[in-house]
Image 1: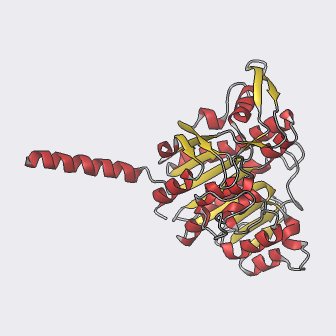
Image 2: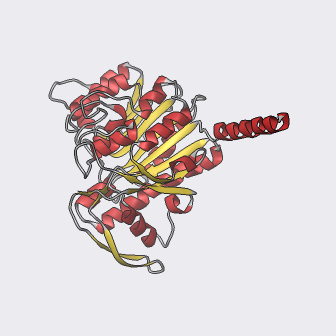
Image 3: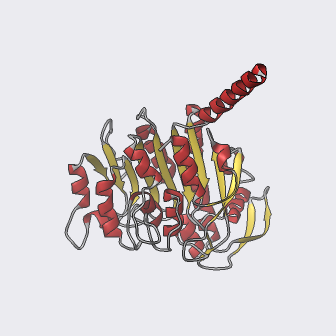
Amino acid sequence: MKNKISLFLILFLLFSSAVIARSPKNIIILIGDGMGINQVQAAYTQNGGYLNMTNRCPFSGLRQTNSANKYTTDSAAGGTAIACGEKTNNGMVGMSADSIPMNSIIRLATLKGMSTGVISTSSITDATPASFVAHQPVRSMQDEIAEDFLSSDISLFIGGGLKFFEKRKDGRNISKELTDKGYKMAYTLEDVQPVENGKLGVLMAEDGLKPVKERPANFLPDATQMALDLLSKNKKGFILMVEGSQIDWAGHNNDKEWMVNEMLDFDHAVGIALDFAERDGDTLVLITADHETGGVTIANGDYEKKEITVKYNTGGHSASPVPFFSYGPGAELFSGFKDNTASFHIMKKLLKL
């Protein structure tokens, strides 16, 4: 009997150690706004049958995206579900359906002393990045969302949205107020000064950035690398959210070429994240979407010719489940068919937040 108990204890301790060993120090969340499974397939085909997200991540799954009040979500509710782990109404950022502010995974990490950051090819005050930082009942309240950055204590943000910080109706200069709080502010990646202990904000456009063919080359991958170089200095770890916003914009425009180019640019940033995670060995990488845009279907394609025939069924969002890919410590916990709120709770448990 004693031998059986001893064996049970040994197995229990080994299992417990394995669970603990899966916990990451850092998490990188990459959100392809509007990226459904067929957007992935289109980019995969036009890239000759290879993407970082599909070929380098050992675990995958799907996520339901319905919001609290609509079968088809918008980016605000979809982003909030990922960031805060609770369904909310379309249009609301960082708040529950009954208008109660919620702590995002980034806020919880900040409170624990971890470094945190958000990057976007849209305005940094747009719905998805705002869901990780702000608390507002209406996503269009971008002046108010910019003000929320003052109390967020986030370590880094890079994207557009300059006018909501510096060209406001109330005359406030939020960038100046952030500088007074210790942030270094810049307007291009090239202008960024070395940041050792302070915080960084980069506002690269009045509102959203230009499409991938027109904005600075490799902006999203380069911004991701810059963020990783800065945030990884914190021995307590970090959480970084990177959004490829304009996959969604291309979907609204039913523009296949724009969509595929944005997908490949986003996947380049995924590659940067995976390269870091492979070297580091203690970083979890999560790739997903807030919703699908365009109702994309694929009629035909050719991997060798790198050609794809796409049909759009709507100029808006669809309610189709979206893909999920994961790599690193704890990655297996995210596989399967889950609600879009699930990731928050798994991340929170892994990081003991």
